[in-house]
Amino acid sequence: MKKNLVMAFAAALLMGGLNAQAQAPTAAPATTTAAAGPLKLGYTNIDYVLSQTPEAKDIQNQLTIQRTQSENELKRMQKELEDKYGAYEKGAAQMSDVIRKDRETELQGLQARIQEFGRTAEQSLQAKYQQLVNPVVQKIQKAIDAVAKESGYQYVFNLDAGANTIPILLVAPEENNITELVLKKLGIDPAKAAAANKPAATGGSTPAATKPASTSAATPKK
Image (cartoon, rainbow, N blue to C red; front, side, top):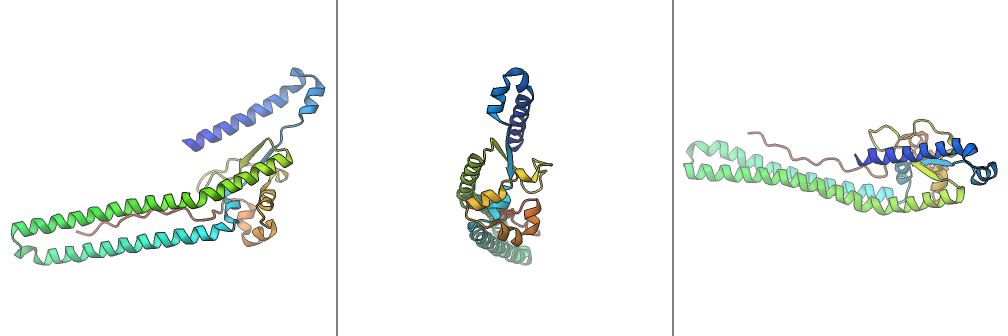
């Protein structure tokens, strides 16, 4: 919903600017229009820029370590549950009602803990991703602001809306692509970035660090 609102706002800004330009000859003297100049729009791909930053590899490594630790703990808990359930099945016939009920309660509690751990692990991974990525995104935004100011762009759009989404800009002239200028502002060589990741350079999103995948707990067989 938030992304749709942003896109709608951006479209409104674009249409408003274009309408103002179209109406300028009749609404104001020619000298005023000439002084204002044409509306200048630029675009870049933040995901691609993010993927080329020095911090990208470290972010990916930290996320991978945390994800692996969570997955290993889930496997350990799952194995404990399976072992205890196997022992319960073997001895259930000889157990008294009180012991049987106690073992069943223990198994149910362990399964609930596994499910809760899966949820909290996923939330923790998402939080870690935001913690690591946000400072880099802020740095990129400052670079975009500087490039826009220096080059006279009134508006700069993000080419890609994210993974598995339709790009915001479907057609745009290459001369309005400020990605190389942003990379240079960040101290990154655009030629090396393009050579290292040609598919990303020609379009599409290449995230710096894979966004956290869902860490779900497996349901034990019963």
